[in-house]
Length: 414
Image (cartoon, rainbow, N blue to C red; front, side, top):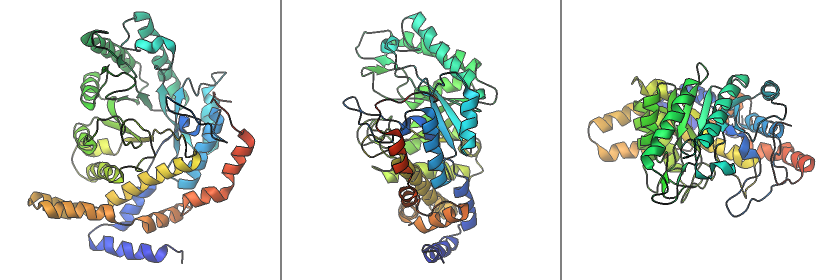
C-alpha cells in the first residue's frame, strides 16, 4: 500500500459521511486544467532588477519544453499561453510551433498581444490620442486574431497598460470612446468559436487614471460587445481589501466571467506564487467557482464550466520550473478543498440564517488536509504523488542549466 493510501481511506470515509461523493471529487480533480504562461519560464524582473536564472528559457521551444515538463509532473497543465511578439517565430511558422507543442504532449492556449512595450505606446495604445498609434496597436491585436486558428487557440487575452499620469493630460471621456471603438473592431475579427477576455487593473504603470481600471468597466464593455467578450480577473489587479470572490460570484451569475490570471500579492501587482500570501482567499474564490459549477443555476453553471484558468507570475528569485509546478499544485489544493465543501449542509445553514454554522462548515473544508486525496488522484493519473520531489529527482533542472547556461534575454520560436 502506498504511504498515502491509509490516510486517503480515512479522509474518504469522512467525506462520504458528510454526503460528498469521493469518486466525483476525484473525477473533477482529474479534469482540472491550469494553463501556464510561456513568459513564466524566461528571465523576468522588477522595475529595479532582472535576476538571470541558470537554465531559464531563451526561446519559445525551450518554454514549450518546460511547460511540457510541468504537465508531466502535475498532469493538469496541458496548455501554455503565448505572448506575441515575445514568442513570434522568426519565420512566422506558427504551424510548426503548434506541432512542436503537440509532440511534447501539450497545446497552445491563450494568445496575448503586447501593446505596452514599444516606445510608441508611451501614451497608450487603443487609448492613445494619436490615431496612427491606435492603428498600429489595433493591427497588432488583429494579427493575433489571425494567429489564433494557426495555433488552435480559442482565447485572445487582452491587457492594456493604457492610462494617464497627470490630471488634464488627456480627455478621460475621449479615451473611453477610443477604447470602445478599438475593442469593437477586435471583436468583429475574432475567429469563430473563440473568446476575447478583457483584463482590468486599477493602477500601474499609469498612476493617475487607468483606462480599464476595474471589473465594472470591463464588464460594461464586454456586455456591449457581445457573448464572445468576457472579463478576465487577475488576482493582483485590485486595491487592498477588495473582495475578489464577490466579484467572481457576480460575473458568474451574469455569464461574464471568462478567465483568471492566478498569482498572489501582498501590496500591489506582486505576481507572487499563487496561494503563497493568502491561500484562504484562493480557496474562497474556488469555492464560488465550484459552487456555481455544481449548481443548476444558469448561466452561472455553464460559465463556471468554461472558465480559463491561467497562471500569470514572474518568478524572479525563486527559480522557474519548481515554482511553476508549485503554483499549479496550490491551485489544485484550493480546488480540492472547495470540492470538500458539503454543499447541501452549507445551503441549509445559509437558508436558516445560521451564521456561525455556515461559516464553520466553510472553514472546516478549508482546514481539511487534502494531501492524501491529491496523492491518490495523482497516482491514479500516472503522475508523481509528490511532483516537486519528482522534479528535483528527474535531473531536468541540471540538464537545462548545463545546456542553456545563463542568459539575459528570451527570444522567439527557435
